[in-house]
Length: 317
Image 1 (spheres, rainbow, N blue to C red):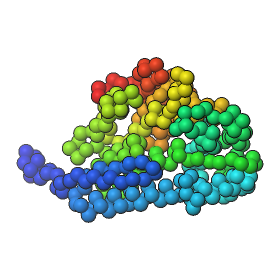
Image 2 (image 1 turned 90 degrees about the horizontal axis):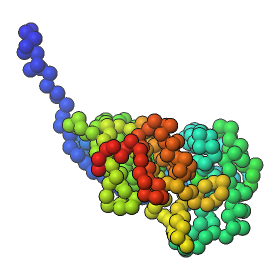
Image 3 (image 1 turned 120 degrees about the vertical axis):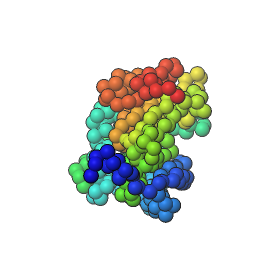
């Protein structure tokens, strides 16, 4: 065959795809799937699989549900007992252990108990005695974790996996999309984003990162063809007392809100990595800026003085 005619036979025979949007509510927040699929049936099947898995993880790890596996673990923790966990829970605990070490103890899944002392709707500071009592029951280093055995030598502790489960759910959603044959998807779980491929025309997904001072405005626009984007900030849940601002992200060593940064966004290959990096940076305060630089991940930060930095700011909103 003459090579100059071979191009006639290189036409892409893949069927055209359509856009399908699926909003839903899970994990206490608004969620949305944007899928491109050849048929409504394929899009519906993919969306159903993703939503079912997100709801499964919420039922399994919600601290608000007495029937959840996390609540069962916390009942053992309260009594100072020991429990064996399944592989999925063990993987999350292993990751939390890594984050605890990398953050020098600041990322601590046992520190959620400190929220009992803080009521950000009351406009009042916590009772010092209550805070000290809770601090005495905080510290992942006090937990005896030897996979799959989880022991609590110190009675009265409590675990909270809220810092990793939503991002983990976003990563699982991306895998489910690919398993369902959907190669172009944007997953938004309450602002934690996961991208599957680019858009069907080859262009990147374009998403904006909100300005904490003006949520309706964007600090930067991020172009992604995969990976995850997650943000952490305390500007939506905070209170000001005598001119001092107190946010809801608490230092597990002191029990008091962190100071220095008000918002951090990070891009990584996996949403769970982006989310934990953003949270650790917030916990580190001013030192979080240099720490983010050392990671080499695209990011941006906003501090309490309104200063902004990070390579993502180079992307115009």
